[in-house]
Image 1: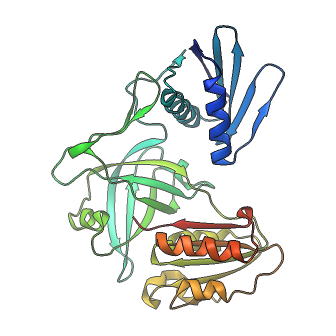
Image 2 (image 1 turned 30 degrees about the vertical axis):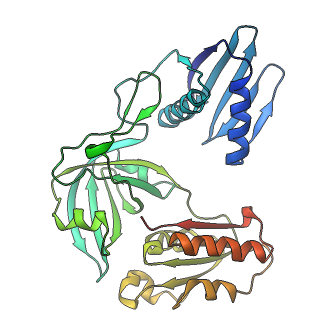
Image 3 (image 1 turned 90 degrees about the horizontal axis):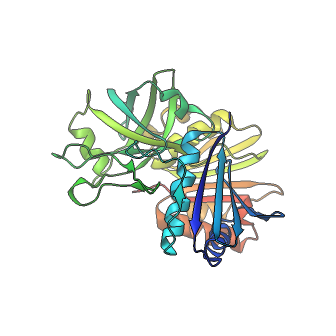
Length: 319
C-alpha cells in the first residue's frame, strides 16, 4: 500500500526548490529532475515539487504512514526556514509524533555489572525488530508528568521544551515478539537513563520512537569497533553478518555478555590504536561506535587511509 499526500506553496520565487537542492546535497541523497518537477528520495519515500506560475505543488508518497508524516514534517520545517508555509491536504493534527509508540515497562533485569536488560510491552512492538536496529527512548524529567511530541497543524512535529523536555537516548532492539521488545542499557555515572533505572520504572508508560539508524552493513569483509555502549549493536550485527566479520571491543570481560565466548571478538584497551593497526583488505567495511571524540578520530583515521564515506560508519553512541 502506498501512502500519499499533497501540499501547496503559493507566491514562491524558486526558494522551495533551492532549499530542497541544498538539503539533498547536505544529506547526500538523490535529487532528480523530471519533465515537470524535482524528485527528492529519502527514507524509502519520495517528494516531488512541481513549480508553476503561481507557486509549487508538493506530492509525497511512502510505503509507511509514519515515513510519510516524517517527510511531511521535515519538508514543512525546511520550507518554514525560508519563510514559506506549505498548506497540506491532510495533517494528522494532535497525533503522536510519527513513529512514536507508548509502551509499558514490563521488567528490568541485571545482565552483567554494567548492563541492565529492559523489557517493554505494547501492541506494535514487533515493528521495532526489523532491519533498522535503533530507536529513541523518551524519558520525562523526574517528577514531571509525560508530555509527548505531537504533530502540529502545520504538519511538523512539536517537541516539549523547558521543564517538559524529554531525554532522548538511542538504544538497540536485541529481542522482540509480537507485543514486546527488549534492549540493554549500559549504566554509567551521570547518565539520565541510569537515574531513570534507579527509580525502578516497572509498570510505567514510556515513549519510544523509530525504528531507524541503520542495521547490519552489507559487506563480506566487516570490521567492528566499539566500546560498552556499542555492545548491543555489535551483538545484532554478529548475529546477522553474511560474511567474514571481526569485532574489537573496549569493555570488561564481564560486560561482553554472550560475546565473551565468541571467537570473532577481541578485547582492546584503546579503539583508535586498534583501528590504526587494522590490515584493511579490498572491499572491507569498517563500523565504529563510541565517544564522540573517538568517532571523530576514527573518521579522520579512515579517511587518511584512503577509505571513502561509503565504506565506513563512525558514530557517537554516548549521550
